Length: 369
Image 1 (tube, rainbow, N blue to C red):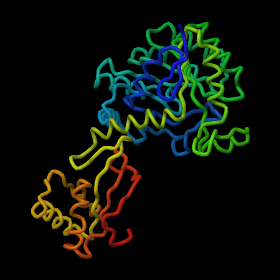
Image 2 (cartoon, rainbow, N blue to C red; image 1 turned 135 degrees about the horizontal axis):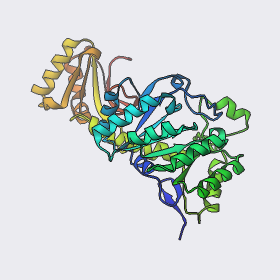
Image 3 (spheres, rainbow, N blue to C red; image 1 turned 180 degrees about the horizontal axis):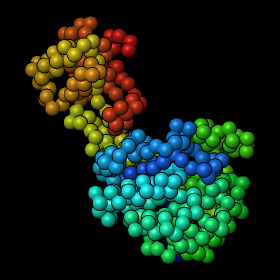
Image 4 (cartoon, rainbow, N blue to C red; image 1 turned 120 degrees about the horizontal axis):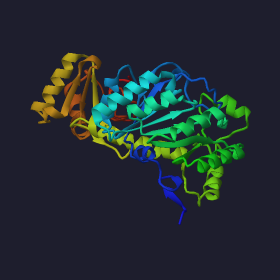
C-alpha cells in the first residue's frame, strides 16, 4: 500500500532517488560547475559572487579536477551532484569532471546533474556515455516548454534515472500539478519538491511578490510546505516517487552529515569532533615565532604533552593543541611567558583550513586581538 512516509525531516511517497539517498548521508560532493545561466528564475538563491564562470566543490573555490577529487576524498564521497548556474553551459567541463571522477572512484561513484535547459539529444548522449547516473530537469519558473518535454522524452530512452526537481511555489499549485501529471503519464523515475526559500539575493523580488518566511528563524517561504504536503496526499497512490525536501533537511541533515564526514578526515590528533561536525581545539597566539618554539618546548618537556598533539603555524604566530591540555596548563604557561602570550582560546571551527570559528572560550586573554 502506497503511503506518505517520514524520511528525516522530509516526506516521501515511494523510495527517494539514489542521489537523494546519498545526499542525506552527506556523501555527495556538491560540484558547482559554473554560475552562468540565463533562465532568469525570480526565486534563484544564487549569490551575486557566484553568478560567474567559477567552480566550487563543497563551497570551496577550485580551478582543477584534482582539487575536486581531493575534496571528494575529504568527505569520503560516494558520488557527486553537479549544479550551477546552468551546468550544461559548460558541457565540456561537466563531461571532463564526470569522466575523471568515475576514473578515480570507479563506476559505482554516483553522478547526478541538475539542468533547467532543453538539452539536445547529442548532449544527453554525451552525458550518458560519460557516466551520468541521474538527470534532474528543472523547468524554469515552472514553465514546462515543448522543448524541455522533448529533451525529457529522449532522456527516458537512455539507461539512467530521469526526474524533475522544482521549488514548491505556493501560488503556482496548478502548474505543479500539471508537471506531476506529466511525470506520471511519462513514467519518470521521481519528482523532487523543494521548499521555496528567501535569500539575500532574491529577497527584493520575493518581497514584491508577497512571499514571507514561515517564521523568524527560517528562510523557508510560508505556504510552500503546506502545498507540498497537499500534493503528497493527492498523489500518494501514484506509482512515481514524490519526495519533498525541506529547508531544514538541507541544513540539519545533509550539510551536517557532510561536515561530520569531512571532520573525520580533516581532524588532527589534538582535535575533537562535535555532533555537528565542527572541530574543537585550543589555539595559542603569541607575539613572535621565537616564543612559539619556547612554548612548544615547555609543553613537551615540562608538561609532557605528546609532540604529535601540537602544531605550530609560524605564519600566524599560532600554536594548536588539545583543548584539555590548554585548559590544564594555560594559566601556568601565561605566568611563565608573561607579556608574550596574547591569548589562549578553546575554539569550535568548521573543518577547513580557514574554516569559520563559531565559538570562542577564553582561557587566557591578555590582549584584545
